[in-house]
Amino acid sequence: MNNKKFEYKWVIAAICTLMVFVCLGFCNSAKSLYIGPVSEGLNIKRAVFSLNDTIRYLSTALVNLFFAKLILKFGTKKMIAAGFIAVTVASVIFSIAPNAPIFFIGSFLLGVGLALTTTAMVGNVVNKWFDKGRGAVMGFVLAASGLGGAVATQVLAPIIFQENNPLGYKDSYLLCAAVTLVAAIVVLPLFKESPPQPINEELGKSSNKKRTISWQGIEYAEALKKPYFYLTIILIFLSGVALQGMSGSAATHIKDVGVDTDFVATALSINLFALAFSKFLTGFLYDKFGLRTTIIVCSATGVLSMLFLTAVTNTPVGKILSLLYAIFGAFAIPMETVLIPLYASDLFGQKSFNKTMSVFAAVNTAGFALGAPIINGFYDASGSYKYGFILFAVIMLVVLVGFQFVINAAHKERKKTENE
Image (cartoon, rainbow, N blue to C red; front, top):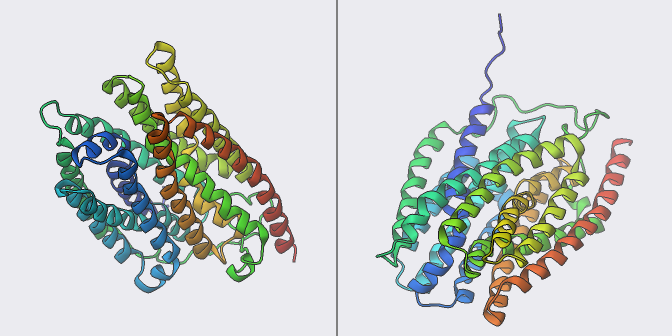
């Protein structure tokens, strides 16, 4: 007879998955479909529309910067509730905004809502409820954004691109608001603030399971004295710039070169389904092979995907390249989601986890804010995103090399700490 007691942490993982599916997936991952319709609907240039991303990511960065303090003051459940409210209200504002300034108010609220319901929050909750295999759990939960985005693409694209309604995007945003509200009604009653008993693990004592069992780490004040802490911040920022600039404009770029809308929607759906798989695989890779291997895989696929985009054309070969981007690009994106909490736990440990993750999440989204105007600036100057993708490919090569120095220094510090 199996007397193994069911653990509520799996319910927590499930409702976090639903939260990410809706907020990060359904309401955010298909955002590139809106660039053309909203720019035309509000009669603004695409570079001006890109301020939507800039404002959203700056508000996310601001919230993430104070995330650790907010958690201590309000707790996770209240913050998640506030996040759902912010995402819902933002979608409503998008649907009724008559001009760009009003639309940007929604952008600010969406950024706040995503900060309270996605990467940083999931990192905090998973770290609190799970002791082993955190990488795989993080990957599984955040994989829901890819599935949510894939579903959103198929559901929202026909609404956005209605033949007889150039303002179809407004109806799309209203649907997003309704879906978010329903998700909140499901998630909040089931969510529990903390596990019945705090996780009690032998931190840093197992030599053969260092990748799946956390280490005590160093205090945040000590982390601030380490040069590799600041190099980590720079590299996270740069990867945020490049990856968000790529993912936020890829679908529009493929459409701009003449590929029909149906194929673009299909490519984006493939990308988002692949993203769901890649986030779980990234967590698995981390648990199995460690941070170095995971970063090499994500960075290298990022470089390749950007190079594929530069060669996309409205030809059979060009369409194949767009599909290759859809697959390879998906394996790069976990650097801006799954890896953020893992950078904090692997490089600096549990003692400073919430504070280092808050900083990393903030600079990551600050990079997002800069990525959008850079890539759209290239479009406005040259009529193409291609040269922006080349720049981003170079940046990802710098990130790949830079993280090798960070990991060497951090793991040397970890070995020193564990031997004391």
